[in-house]
Length: 302
Image 1 (cartoon, rainbow, N blue to C red):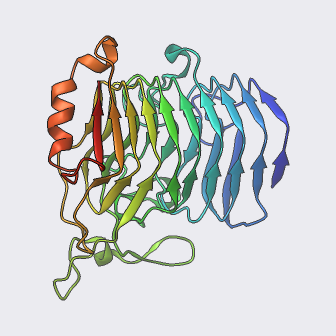
Image 2: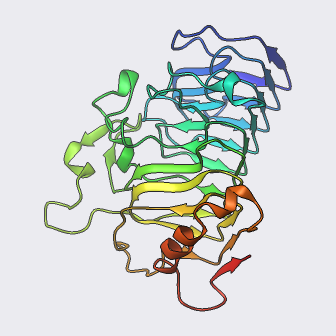
């Protein structure tokens, strides 16, 4: 399927799973599959879905007021797809809050990802319940045809760079629970060895693999961060006027021995901005223990 520079409006059929506006459906390896430059307007369901498909391109699309998620990576076995320079806008939170996709109470996202081993590059998300959400906490066994055959909470990321989330009701970037590991999978992204999802290899070595989240910008969200992640490093992260600049409860030492969970990052808060002041002290306390203690690595600007 190759669809470019088209407008689709009032599309999708709620609450029926699979009745999305634009949908790559169980195409397996499909490098010729492209959604580029399309406008999805006032959808009744997910704007664009990548489902059981690998190596596809979703690039420079605009999703406006989809009554669910903007972009959706559905089952958890999807590999090497590139979501780049897309814009997802929810003009009013009430238009986009539904429960039939995520399974959680009225929680949706501009990008809702169960499949983690994909490239997420220079996307823009505005006004959703969450900006980018990777729901490892309750989709740990995957979804649909991949259910029980994947462990997406432990799949390594693809390239993750240059995304922006702002004015989201809960989280901007929300990595939830993610611990990327050296999982053993087949060409369709399904597990060959379920033991490869475990913390340690059979000989007792740390089974983690380091991933980097680069050049992420979040501003004017209530939260940014995650509950529990490991072997994920933030590089050149920028937080501006978020209620919680970096929310993070549990982590681990990096498998490759690197020391810093955040590098070259900026935390900017305006005390007169109501979104910034509610947890300013908490945010500063959290970050102080995870940043390199030199003046040119982490900043607080007030």
